Length: 367
Image (cartoon, rainbow, N blue to C red; front, side, top):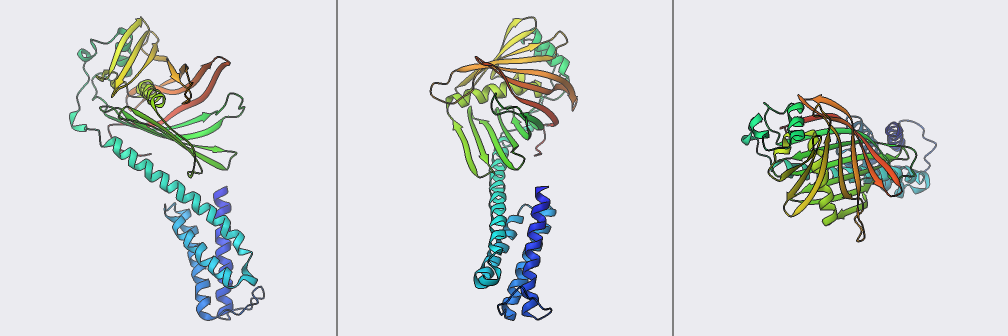
């Protein structure tokens, strides 16, 4: 809806500039413009019209550089407004609105380019030439519940997974007191041999303002960024607590690519007939997650003591992922729906519900 309103605004603004051209060449009587417009300046008015209409077309066809054309239009338009201030001064208001949209679009474009670079750096670590088939013998050293999970998931007899691209939709709350859920869309990318991931999420606040976030783990280090309108940094966190939390997240999310359970940087410890503790040690960062299974070898839930905050006095809190639905996607049974809860002293806070919409293995694709 907002896009349609903006298209109408920028098209209408362009049509207004056509009046200057019509007046300069005396094609029709234009009583709204009192000042004299020479033919050379009439051409400039026509140019502004063309640039704004082209900008509207580029928005419709989703051309990523539409904002550059719109900025050019604003520049030409404002120059004309300054010269013909008495007749055209109120056009400044529309130019300001368009300029805000242009700046926001530029911020999103720039942020997406950064994300593109980080995704490429993740996939550059992947070597698809070293594929091997998962055999029952390769599971022999694993605890029985983990062994049953891998067999049930369908990875035995298939190539091991080296990279993952997935698309999610979700519902998020930013505080325990929040009543309504904010809908999210997200994309996530993993490399397994040199463990890393990038999670990119978009969420609308108040139906209009978009927030984007990136959670990144690479070389044993984590980083979290949140930006308002893709431009204004709200969060930019790193450090040992973020490193550990990002590693634990990676470890929990191997349920989406189960063959990673065989990775040399993960050690398994049996707890009972239906649970096992996974500890991951990579480049000096260490973290653990407990996996709980049912008798059919399906993951029921995951638990970890994990940092919720990045402050100096932050302590580990109980972090629980509850699996709501198992589904076969691309031949592998994985948790398709999950809920993530912080078990706080004040009570449980379920802050995120996530659903996998699409997942691809061993292929480099961005959703």
